[in-house]
Image 1 (cartoon, rainbow, N blue to C red):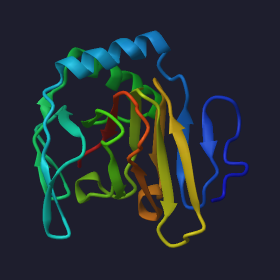
Image 2 (cartoon, rainbow, N blue to C red):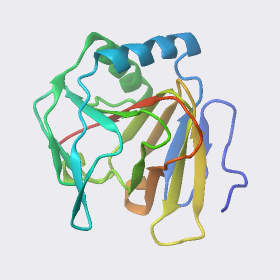
Image 3 (tube, rainbow, N blue to C red):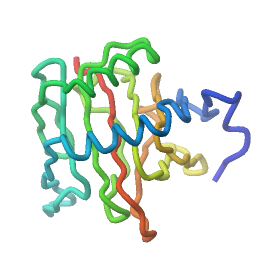
Image 4 (cartoon, helix red, strand yellow):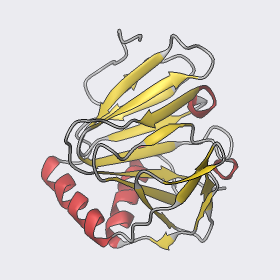
Length: 203
């Protein structure tokens, strides 16, 4: 696993990965504020657990999800189609913040709640057709720190992992989704919950 010289500068950190444009913003939201947001999202979000089909078998998705949007456009992945809720006041404020940082006007927010170490997200790319070519994906993390794994589609020597910390922002853009897969794997450690918000633009 190649780990050397992946970061440049103090804040934010640019990951020096082939065929990728990924930036990590630690402490993007201050700790106390991030903790308050975690509790709001945990308690006020209408979480759902959908079934997914893997190699012809049906399983309960190993995390809870919710979709919010500025429009009524649905979002589909892994044979799941989700319809958006209107943005809450908390999500509106977060969207404005992330929009300004990323210089984008995101339309769709997908929330994931990883309740413990058994909850996960398998290898995938955010390359659904609704997202268009070279999608910009921003991800806010709240709660338990979790490792985010990356691997190149065509070069199995190119792998990396980064610890997504409480209150951090990860920004992926350019051709990243064409060339890299990512996941949040399960862990046997006794850990608390994590909520992340992924910001997308549905065309």
